[in-house]
Length: 199
Image 1 (cartoon, rainbow, N blue to C red):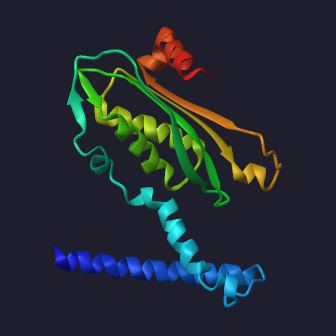
Image 2 (image 1 turned 90 degrees about the horizontal axis):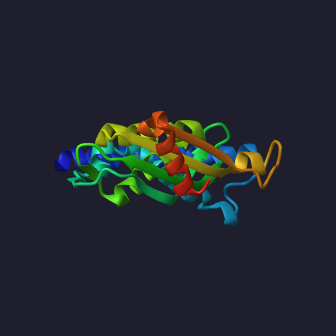
Image 3 (image 1 turned 135 degrees about the horizontal axis):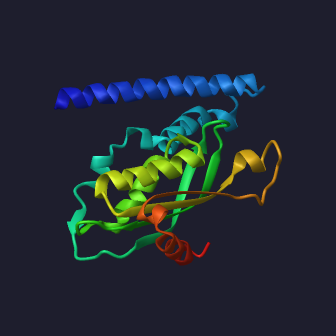
């Protein structure tokens, strides 16, 4: 309704204002002057950016899928590779970025629109995360939607929290995987998935 829409808009404006105030406080705490020319609009810009970086918190899986599950006579592996992902490390609030590979073996003739796999990856990436949990959440979401014979998700990322601070290893990458159903229990199926991903 129009009333609910107006209430949501007011709540969003209040949240943005609070976030802008918090960013100004952070700038002051690191010895910066939020009123200098280069930083005048930074609190608003960063607040808006952070809300975008974490917009997956507001997404609902059913809305993302949007009924894009179809009947098709296909029972072999479906694989979408090299899905770019951008996420935020929940420990240091800095980005980690990389690629996700999603595969599943249909059951009951249920297949999903390919773009929905990328959207599901975005939904769980665009929030404060750790890579291990992100990998499992995507696999479980696909399992919930499709009830397939098997699901496999591999994520390869570079973490700025390792590159810019701490051990400062700029070339290090992290690989995580989650395999469910036949892609976990059937060694041949699992190998086929890994060979197609070429890991």
